[in-house]
Amino acid sequence: MNLSLKNGQNQFTPSNMVLGVQFLFVAFGATVLVPLLVGIDPAVALFTAGVGTLFFHLITKGIVPVFLGSSFAFIAPIIEATRLYGWPGTLSGIIAVGFVYAVVSGLVKWRGLKFIERLFPSTVVGPVIMIIGLSLASAAIDMAKTNWTIAVVSLLTAIVVVIFTKGIIKLIPIFIGILVGYIVGFALGAIDFTPIKEAAWFSLPEFTTPKFSWGAILYMVPVAVAPVIEHVGDMYAIGGVAGKNFIEKPGLHRTLLGDGIATAFAGIMGGVPNTTYSEVTGAISLTKVTNPFILRVSAVTAIVFSLVGKISGFLKTIPQAVLGGIMLLLFGMIASVGIKTLVDSKTDMSSTRNQVIVSVVLTVGIGGAVISWGNFSLAGIGLAAVVGIVLNLLLPGDSKKVVLEN
Picture 1 (cartoon, rainbow, N blue to C red):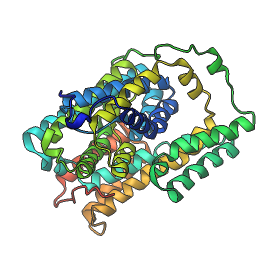
Picture 2: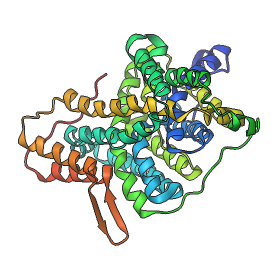
Picture 3: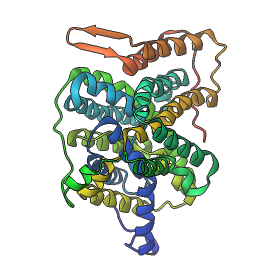
Picture 4: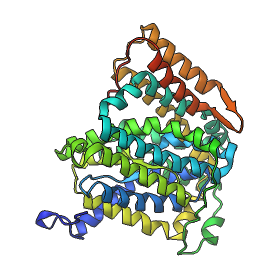
């Protein structure tokens, strides 16, 4: 990977350092939110996001301005998989998701993007995304009801930020929502500062060793459908801002492989999946900063933050009600993205074929259907995705490809 750019653009200048920290700030709220929601050390997520981003830049020849973060699409599946198979078992599923990215990368290199579009049309991707958002809506309610005042304040703050603000602030509604909710929690005496007091100033993240579990692998693997599709959209969006075709150079197969290696590494270390991140994509579109080196500064900063024990201790003091309030908005917005996918792709919902696919996928995913054979089982989002793919391939007619619009 060539780390040098013309005109001294790639030097450790004060402006580049500030911009690098700023991009981490944009992704910080969401990157640490996912591990907090699934119950792991947020320092692990920061560490694996930083290292994963550096892996991505190495694989993509250092020319794509990307910072990898924790994908919201995996929150509900990880929570449920952890309940069923334990956290070490779930990690084997996360590693398998990384291999899925690698397989899709190989398919794109071999057959091109049209093969993926045929396999994952809007009638499959749309309802699967909806299920991801709605499948654990009750978990958001359970967390929010621990203190409805704090939860509602966090929720309303995030809504105000995402609706009424502009610029860089509009890109961090989760961060602002958590911050305001935390302040209200402090005022109400709902904060337990014990984790901060007990944390060392400098310490290694709490890494976890994966444990092989076929059940967790089968549960997690199909969930990769939505982030893979989002990845393609992010590459188009970032390429449009940078004035470059990253689909062609370094190639979509390389960017997908970068996500896959980063996600597999995260699973090995005990972290959550790391993928190309819409918040950072939005920040790049807004600021027009497309120097990949700046994103590598963000990655190094994330690694440094992961080693500061007091930061992890502080994050662990965030009240459950704050997280619940954010989840009330977050899970619903994920579901709305599924609806938007169908609308943007101009999916003909008057077509009986499309109605059948979408209906069965939603019913199987939300209804809790399970298929078991021996020690293996397939359920929830994973089963719904498989059913959607099979129906799309078997039923006569064609579905619209996914169209990604801002």
